Length: 403
Image (cartoon, rainbow, N blue to C red; front, side, top):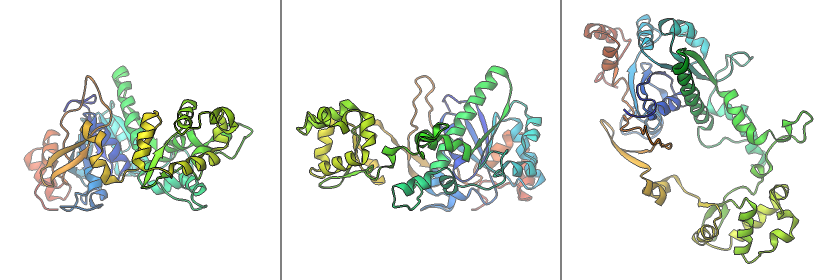
């Protein structure tokens, strides 16, 4: 595989969403990723509609580009195999709590002993210096802990709510892939491997507080926090005559264009509420209500034509299925087809970033459980007899051994 991380070998000891999303991002950039799964497989394999057991869509879309090896890390032979693989890896990524890795015999000191140059990265719940260190963590919990659920309460009649996606898992997964890449660059410059810790709580908080710390940024707090525009009840898609539309009249220039297009060219100059961005934020509820009333008078297509003509940001409200025929995504070839060896023809999203000199090429489809175990173990130096013994002991699972 080509790509900016071509030649980098990643040992992926993660399950569910956050860690696998981080390692899939590395695979998308060309890294060779071996996904080590427990005998029962990653639990995410079983989410959503399936053609075959263990190959659900969330798994397929979070584990492309990887090879799968089954190892029972609780058995000494499984631990020995993991350390043998770590000795030849550039990166090890795990999503267990650090004390669990220590208990397994795969803590940083044990891994660095067999490979001092390794980048040893953990993605888990909380920083290990505080009282939450040993607590388990999932996306829903982190949306509550970092204020996301409470922010939703401010715009939802006081009822807290979650974003309807794995928001924290994916944000922290992306942060982890960036931190790992930076550690690899450091190693290129210095020859030193290192431990990298990416706790969900502390990594997600700056993402939330960058918008909403507000007046609490100051030692003598100026308010209770929160960004008024984002917390306005009027900040939502606008209803039109025949549907919904998202529009963002934001800058002074856009407001002048909006008002001129509606036949009210003097509004910005004569109404103090529209004088500048600060004034508009101070009166955001009134302004969004006004825009809502105006947009109800035309169809979505009429407003899209108006906004494009006047260079004002706007987009339709797409259902997920609408994206498959979105004209821009069709033109850019965003959705790609792949032939999976067991699942048949699949649709997958493209990689968002583009590199002019190291564009990733063909990507592997997400693997069946243990599909690559034999080859991975052979590459690590195991003989056919030794691989057979590991399978007989239940330490690994070889291709074709059933589901």
